[in-house]
Amino acid sequence: MNLPAHFIKTVTSTFPGGAEWLENLPGLLAACERRWDLTVRPTNFTLSYNYVTPATLADGTEIVLKVGVPNREQNTEIAALRLYDGRGCVRLLDADTEQGVLLLERLHPGEMLTTITDDDEATRLAALAMQTLWRPLPVAHNFPSVANWAAGLVKLREEFGGGTGPYDKKLVETAVFLFTDLLASSETPVLLHGDLHHYNILSAGDSWKAIDPKGVAGEPAYEVGALLRNPFTLFDEPEIKRITARRLDILAETLEMDRKRLRQWSLAQAVLSAWWSYEDGGDPGDWEPTMRLAGVLAELK
Image 1 (tube, rainbow, N blue to C red):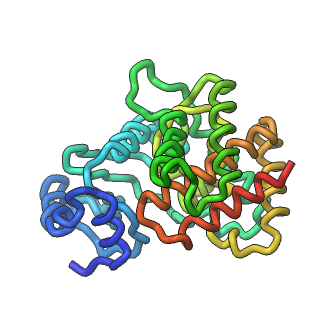
Image 2: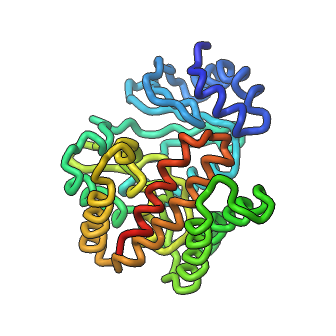
């Protein structure tokens, strides 16, 4: 089975047992074909942590088959998809948590939000997608909280002996302060997508739907952070400060939220995201752009 080198590296460096899982992947796909009476098609999707490929059911229905190393994050994705039930998000058709398998509806035309070249329009569409997704949390659930995620910055300090290593000390301290302050004053938490950006919003008929939800409990204002860090071309944009300020204006107006709070959540989250990239084995080129954005957000008012 011919797999991209970057996919192999990501899986083996991220998951214990990742190498063994990759060896067994052809057998897992064959088992899926037998169990669900489907035909796996060659994939042209970008692969990161999961093997994602088109497939066809016996009745001709086109679907997407997503398989990965079974893990907690995958379980919360499945739980979020079940709660969304196709409303604002791709529909989950079936899943096997023990095998790490998801059968998803195929969205058509399935173009990413990056195809909308007017950044103002793309930002408004993303804001509308957010509002469609937010919903009350079940009384009993296993979704992590934003506070759980924020605790990752404690690991950053531990990694660098109490310091901040290659990360800007002032930005790290600001992020820690903001997480503490914002969490203490948070609204009632709801179910958030957790990673809603241009590459995770696809066209579906005349509307747009989200894919790949993380599933996290937090206040809605937290959701905008991932959007502000994307698309990747943003970091090469000489007018990044103006674009980011404009996005904050649009998000605050469309979502009817406090602009300062949106900016603060996004700053704290940018530093956390940069740390996650380091944890995942990324080189400075993976997290330095995110820290630059954190600096931009710190400068904005």
